Image (cartoon, rainbow, N blue to C red; front, side):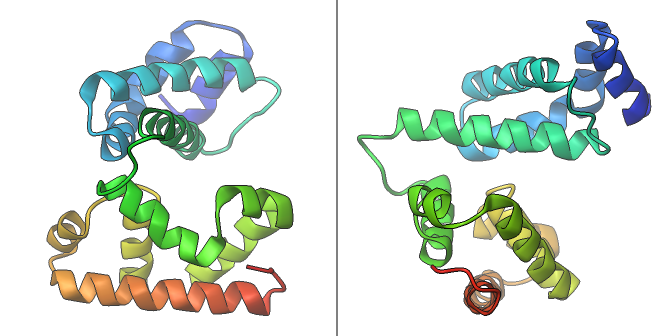
Length: 186
């Protein structure tokens, strides 16, 4: 079923929208949640919460790419759950490492919320990503959107772990430079 038809089911308040969403994107959403939480039950909970949040937000929103819309909801819910679960014992997991790496460029989420207009930041990051060559862009998205480990990215892209680490390090430095040039205070 096409995304537009599924979105129309949400608009029509037809509960089969959730079933259709799960059939088409369930495994994709579970992979996003599991790569952050490393727990099947918590991942399933986030996927179910994703459908509830989509149900509550469509309408008034009408996403053009349902996969991206649901993925973003699932990712945010998973990160929020992860942060609640590890608030007192932070350190060491792949999710911690990913968040810490980006924090060196963007600052903490509180700082980003206070100092940056998120719509402009998103536009600037998308512009930056489009300037990267496809291999580095894929590494960046796999690491910081899907929160995959360096080892998994290396295996997926059939390249060495040291190349992935170096490419990501350079990309973060370029992102920081790009954002400063765009007028963001970091």
